[in-house]
Length: 335
Image 1 (cartoon, one colour):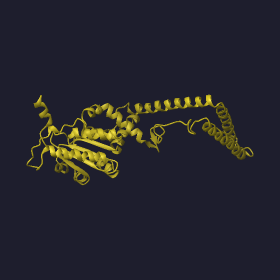
Image 2 (cartoon, one colour):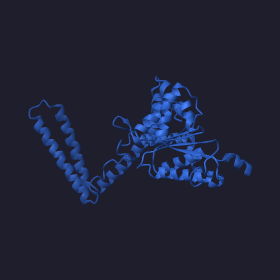
Image 3 (cartoon, one colour):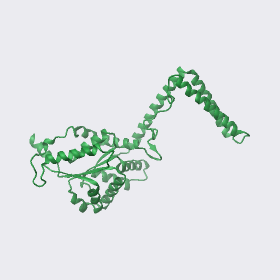
Image 4 (tube, helix red, strand yellow):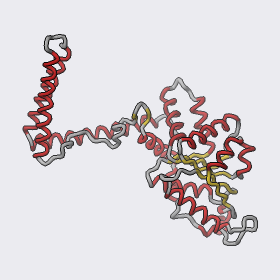
């Protein structure tokens, strides 16, 4: 979860990135000066003319000041064109001395158009992962370590299919969801008893989407509601803390994929229901995928939450039921 150092940590990363790029730019400038001394002379002339132009603007009440300003501007432009020609003749690209950015959208500031940049949101999600140690879990729980042997090949009379065949179908559908993530908007609702592999499967999905450079936020239902409470009822007098809470809330609402694990384990009240609906509805309207895992059967969602939430899940989510023995018990027996 976010803590009070998140914003400063991310902004320090931006500051460090800017300082590194400025240092590299300075090295490139010195390289050009050493190879093309005339370029440095032209730069000094441009600096002098810019200073003169600034003085003229301050004294713009003087006669013919507009004409003088145009002449100075033309002189500066001519010198800059000469610099570009020098760079090309020296074997340098025309933009060789420009400051470079990891994110051209926000120019490594973290903000674009008065709002958080997508790169800041991704950085915030990554910090949350680092703090929750989810990365360590994904190293152990992914499609490469998924073991189908835990699912029986014996047909289940209730469903007319074996747990293994059912799980193979679900895994295939989840892989299709990942493959088509950028082309086909979809949501997933994964239900089943405790210990049948729901969380493991969501870890697999998260791992693949993260490898594809998608912003993925993985939260338990308890942590999700806690974040909603902090955003709604947090200490607004602490502007820094309020910013962190807003950042997490923004990530919840707008990340590429939100994974809500163990829906139904959180405290359920009117606030919980209204905030969950707000979240699911916003993400649906903006085509942001949501993956929900829960022990609750679909028919229980309406009774526990609301008809509005259940109707959205039934209408807009692919619903997968995982059944079989409790894998944790099978593992314990085999030891």
